[in-house]
Image (cartoon, rainbow, N blue to C red; front, top):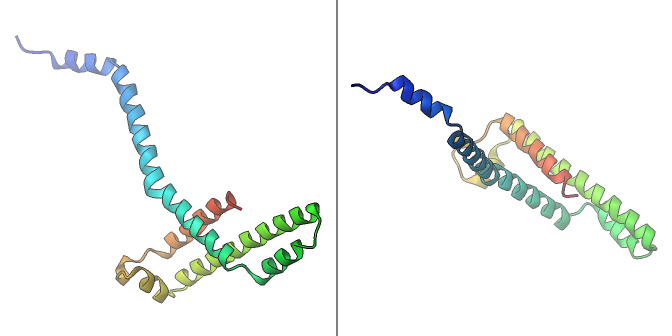
Length: 142
């Protein structure tokens, strides 16, 4: 007698225990891949931008920090909040300049920084998306 393939397949499809486990593993794997391939890189780039802003603050931040020494505790807290806000704005301006330069076709810096061929450069839309993702990541850090 021949095997009834419809019966065998229907029996397999009826068992959902394995399917739930497989979907759980698939989602976990997808979550891990997204974390490693995208989110870690976005956070790392955001940390680099923040570090640059902290190392090279605008004059206003330097002035506020100097004034902080002459303030009471409440004044120091207010100056600290203002300093963080100014550093955030300064970082956003730096990112926007990078996106604008890239979108305007000023690709010399991008090529020299990466050492890649012109055809390897990302599109201006990708640069805009990178700027947006950096902004979102930095909003949580300041």
